[in-house]
Picture 1 (cartoon, helix red, strand yellow):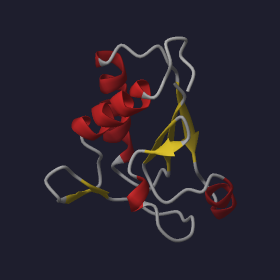
Picture 2 (cartoon, helix red, strand yellow):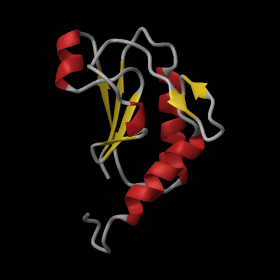
Picture 3 (tube, one colour):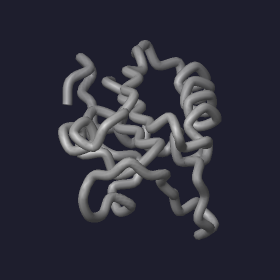
Amino acid sequence: MHVEFLYWEDCPSHAEALARLRQVVQEEGLACEIEIIKIETQEEADRHRFPGSPTIRFDGIDLQPEGVQGQAMLTCRTYRTETGRLSPLPTVTMFKDAIRARSDTRTDDGHL
């Protein structure tokens, strides 16, 4: 599984989001690297289709695709939690659900 973590330095929630992601990857026993991508310019945001910080993708699929709207920009991002609240951080449950959903689509040899 390929995991991307994209962030913008001015968004204060990225450090905690990365810590949660690493925790879940370890708990789920994934043998994968987390590719950390720092977005510093609007050009980079455009190139990476960056909807805000933090953005997490599993095999190219956004953690919460319905939260991706409009153009790429240097901004903080919000996530809708399981309880319907908006949060600057994805929850541990959101990470686990995304990882398990991607794992369920793989064949026994690890391919989609």
